[in-house]
Length: 219
Ligand code: SAH
Image (cartoon, rainbow, N blue to C red; front, side, top):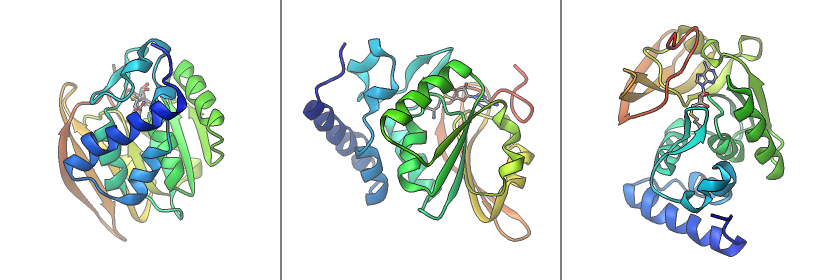
């Protein structure tokens, strides 16, 4: 199916926000505005554009998925991103979540291990005129030590446990969200870094593709 014409895309987006996000209790105006400003159909494969505003994850090729809109909204709200934040995202995928983070953050560094996905994400982020995002290739499970610390870290692939390298790259007062658990089902964990310790808080149950690499699954 083709990209919906401009006006229609906006109508679909408003409906998605009302029915899938606000109706489930997420109300932060900055987060809703950020989501309203990013056409989701740009980040799904061309033969899936008619499904872009449906209430579920969609395949984006290479065995990966673009997350369900509610999950994107939930993670964004719970990450509590402000314009002063330097954000690290692991698992660029389609780049949809990246674009939404970019609307709220000072800067976003995002790491993706599959080059084809990174290239495609880069095209769409550039097309939207977003300039505060840098995309990196490689194993994000070890973070980006040369650029650390980060105020916020969002991991959008599931790990067997919280990778130590990522916790170490959180600034004091910083926060990370990461799905942790088995390969089929996980729980989103919030990790808050205080001066000398971290606090882990379990959030909702979720289902993400695997974080592969040194701090994730080996295969
Ligand atoms: N937020 C993205 C989610 C994509 S799925 C979206 O909504 O489109 C998770 C992504 O994490 C996949 O693209 C996968 O290739 C990537 N990934 C998995 N392990 C990774 C690693 N160690 N480093 C970087 N990216 C990784």
